Image (cartoon, rainbow, N blue to C red; front, side, top):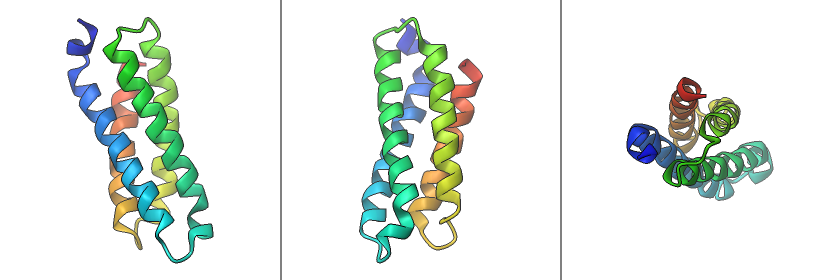
Amino acid sequence: MTHEKYAELLRIVHDCAAACNHCFVACLNEEDVNMMSGCIRLDRECADVCAFMEQAISRNSPFISQMAALCAEICEACGNECSTHADHHDHCRRCAEACFKCAEACKRIA
């Protein structure tokens, strides 16, 4: 089964989606939400694409490599954005780490 072949990637994309969702909620609670708008937007995009990637693997989609390329691109963008806030917000630092890990894992199968 494909999802067994990609067991590690399934875990990584799941963890990335969770980190992005946590960061999204934490950013909404920051004092200057407007400053965090780019981070909030990319957190949502990244969490959604990771969840979609998880579903695609689980159902043995014939488009896994193409989806992995898109997932890597969005994860990298989210990681870059979160990195700009990482010195002041621990949730952004953890999210950036998860995003970069996910981007690299997706690139390996893209």
